[in-house]
Length: 105
Length: 166
Figure 1 (tube, each protein chain N blue to C red):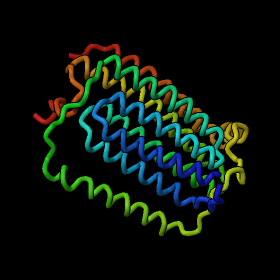
Figure 2 (cartoon, rainbow over the protein chains, first blue to last red):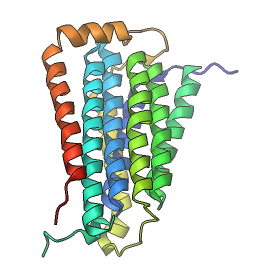
Figure 3 (cartoon, chains in turn blue, yellow):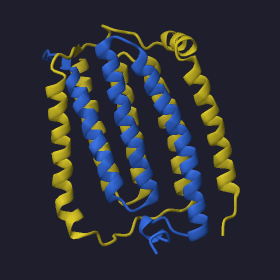
Figure 4 (spheres, rainbow over the protein chains, first blue to last red):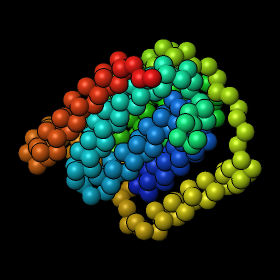
């Protein structure tokens, strides 16, 4: 196996930026409520990767703690958000965000 | 070896994220998101964050995604309808997003020039012992506040899901 040079930490940050942009793209482009919600989770994951990378750079553990808190908030958000989606579906019978537009009228 | 692991799992993560936004069926998107989360867990392990990697697998890859898949199956969500998007969004959107990613990457590479290189095992700070010590000394107040937050979220989810709104 060839000996590869070690990865610079900036690659991790660039990967995190790419994942964040893909999350933004999904959030803006998709029309199904559930997929929009999953894109938000993707963005939170990308930010977590940044936190852990900076923690490695500074040799401090604070970034891990913040990333842990982000995880807890994301879990709480998933529970509440999915309950809201369930209520919208029960009341309107649709999952398309275009069809939930009573505030526009 | 860790370079190879980084390249493989970074490609898997980006491919799964692309698949997430390109698939039209929500269940395929959910499975791709599980792929992203598992590959990110491997990257955390490479960065010496053992506890966060395991929490990522259990909390995200397990609990949150099971919730998503459960809700998708409960609502019997089919493929999403192709709705008319505006001309601007269709043609200017992807180049603008690529531009945004390029600007972010440029700023990162420019603003933080003196970064370490990642070698597996040179720093093992994120064990459960270290995290626990930090969490119960320096970050005790945020920890307690967040436990109240998650309690409120549980009650809110139960109330929201059981209420009839007309």
